[in-house]
Length: 120
Image 1 (cartoon, rainbow, N blue to C red):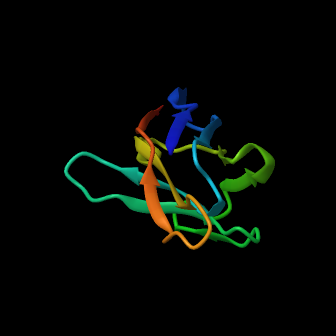
Image 2 (cartoon, one colour):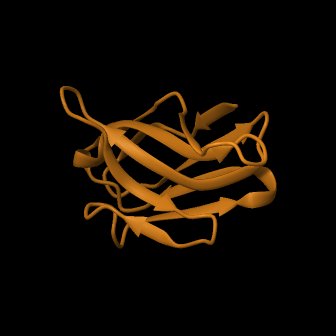
Image 3 (tube, rainbow, N blue to C red):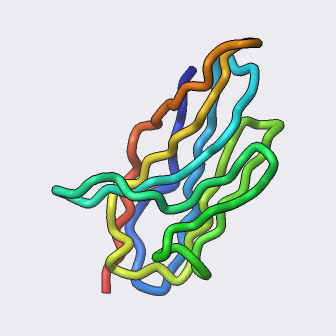
């Protein structure tokens, strides 16, 4: 299983970015998809997640500003980030929970991080 994350960059406060995460490889069932952020010297923190059924969950800092959605046909998840603040600056990682084949255990896979920098 491979994950390709993209969409990070540098924006000014108040701007928007959309992060993408695409999964490929042996995928029987792609369950939860999520985005985490990590600031230097800190642990990864949940930004948003979306279940296979479309149920979403957001971290406090993301509520009202970010939207996570998925395209099941493309095995992709997206994070639309609006009204960005300097404190949103971090490396963002996507994580997916995948069953590679029938009766396989569901395993977590992490994508490479994508840097988001928001200037004031």
